[in-house]
Length: 88
Image (tube, rainbow, N blue to C red):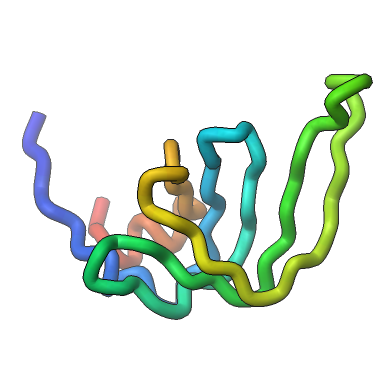
């Protein structure tokens, strides 16, 4: 398997889904990547599980959010975006 380095700046303006260490999921548009790898997302919606009823999801609009690098466990993009930015 060949791995290639992916520069986060390549994804500016892209819709991302971030999974966080506290099990929340953030959907938003990548606006800025700071020199430390922290992300600034705009138009963010948060999805989180109800702590009492794990089958119930909460969704709320947050707007502009700064996400510390060390809280991100997974970054997802849709297939079309992946192909256009990284190739097949």
